[in-house]
Image (cartoon, rainbow, N blue to C red; front, top):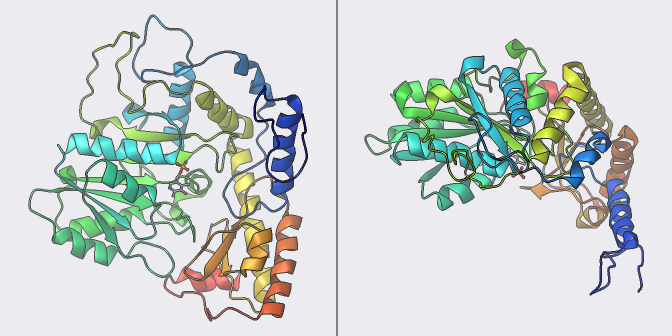
Length: 412
Ligand SMILES: *Cc1c(COP(=O)(O)O)cnc(C)c1O
């Protein structure tokens, strides 16, 4: 049996997965980590305390807010606590909190769409900006809901004037679901939920015929650590009916997971008939992980509010410093206020072969995430500047100048 290091994972074609093979996978991850700055995964959450749970099955079939009986291998009580704490963080009235843990943000956005589809009996149009995550279009297609893309400004935020115009053109009697993106994938732009409500008011959509979902996969928790008066409005108190996060992004949980918080008073009454497991079947998935709710709760409690806040502040200060490094060398780099994401003209393919970074419309980005040392971003900046000098600047002259705070962001 030959196990080699480097290159693709070396495991034998048959026979058991060996410890050496597992070590190889681990080493491959560590090797890749030195260049891992393009995607929003925090890497500072220590899950070792929870390893004890990985020799038992935890299956959260059922719903964390409904009683279950006849089945004990679950963590539904901890799942409910996690959703309650998330609800409090997103300023949902305590008596109106419901929700559950999902496999990730895609499943959470799907749950929001399904809930709105049920509430409005399928007479529903979905609106999301062109900068929304690709899962929105995928899910609208899957759920047979018409989707209208709303233009985004050059800075990635939804054009709410265009939203009013598009909504006004809808067929009579159709309800409106707006998926607001709280931290777009490329630019970390934040759609303003109060401005979306103003746009729907202007289009004459009654309050009872609208649903605003906040897809806050990455930026929800870090933004919640800021004074609500000095950040974009995005949470339940700001007018969202539901909101989701990913657990493997800012919280740094080592396996994909997510959660959705919904206002009970906006949901259609659930069918509480128990199934054979003793619990009603209210989540879109059947069997669900009982481990990920515990992992996310442990991250929330382990870091604590102060820890979450200081992690977010560190990321922002790294992003500010990286913008400074690049702009000092005449690169038109910029970031949104409060964002972890630094945007700059797309690097050459040669540099991207070494640093796997996403690019779109001529721009590239890196994301400063908890646990990744600043030296890594410095090393990237040095290589980027050398590459730019050797291969010439990219044709994008200037950053977009749509939002007024952008000039400040560039200046900082
Ligand atoms: C990451 C992300 C998603 C998809 O989340 P998964 O957890 O990968 O399913 C959806 N929306 C936004 C805004 C994201 O950043």
